[in-house]
Length: 484
Ligand code: PEP
Ligand code: MN
Image 1 (tube, helix red, strand yellow):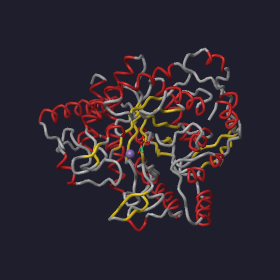
Image 2 (cartoon, rainbow, N blue to C red):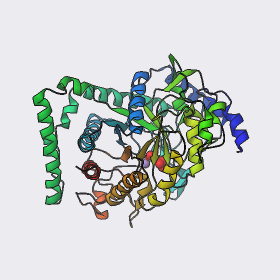
Image 3 (spheres, rainbow, N blue to C red):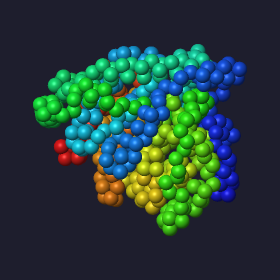
Image 4 (cartoon, protein in one colour):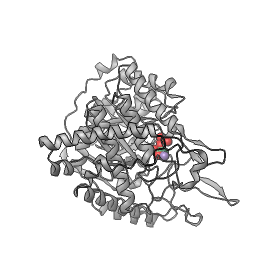
């Protein structure tokens, strides 16, 4: 699309449904549109899942992260399942995220913002609409909010939208219950489960860190800092998912009573002096609502690498919501395209409004990240730079099992930290696919899992996740990079 055409399309008023007039990728075709409307209307009438106040709070924290004053830890399943909405699975996820965050806080000495891929991560983009199963071509599984994994459940069913709402709501309710009932005390390091660590040396190294952590807690308690009751209740924990299914997201988009604040920076002439900056003066043409609209299905939503087309429905929807938002940035993203996306989604140059979640692959990051950092630096956008070391490092074993190696994952994170430092920038967060359970989906790590071990407990029906110990491995590795 030409710049002029784009300007004119952006000057159209944004509404929660304006995305409907744009080309859309990964759309779902429902056979029964009456049933679809009934389900969406039901969701529209149901209460918000998260509050505007919580979303604003997260936005403020991400603003800090964008300035290097906090670090984002985002993680969870590739795709949640309805059956995975159990007390123990949720406890395990909360536990690993809390424990990782402690290791990071301790080494980095900045607050860690915990954002889970939980309570709504039910939709998946797929590379193909159909697949051959038992010699028959059937629709691909696209996440339980859309269809079922069983061969006879592949037709998209609108009732699943409502089911996803209620499973998200049950998960969130349990998270809130745990956090307000001292679950965060589980963070106390002495009962961390390190028996699975194979190497005596590594186990000792981890134990040393844990002992130092425990000492710090004892010291804090002794001097009366961080009243226990208060620290447990006020622990921050947020939810997120890919905003893929826009009719669901629209149904949970709600207008807040507060009016939109004034733009912080409106003088685009500053930007025109910047070498990389887009020549389209989007801050003048983009017509956003004067009311604040929030997506209340999660605190944070991101646009996937496959649905971030400049003129597409997803960018259109995301530009109008006040939630902090993420953009997956893969190897195919051009620098000027990245700037244009930022100009559309962050016309007011708000610190931390955008989290750029880079996912290139350990062997590509050196070629691509520097250009992206330089491009963003040439603008006034102040983003949260987050590294997703999982999605660019997926591989298949000889027997065809999808996996990722802890070596590649660690290498992409370390490269990211180093490249940012070299360019006088800073990595502000990591985005991981993980679970607190002892699954065998990724290879390597201190447990030393090899390809032959993968079949022991491979549960993911989507991408492979780090297990409990592999997740701790990553936290310890990042911690080492920061000097502790
Ligand atoms: C994901 O985060 O599960 C995903 C599909 O990622 P990406 O959009 O980066 O491929
Ligand atoms: Mn995934």
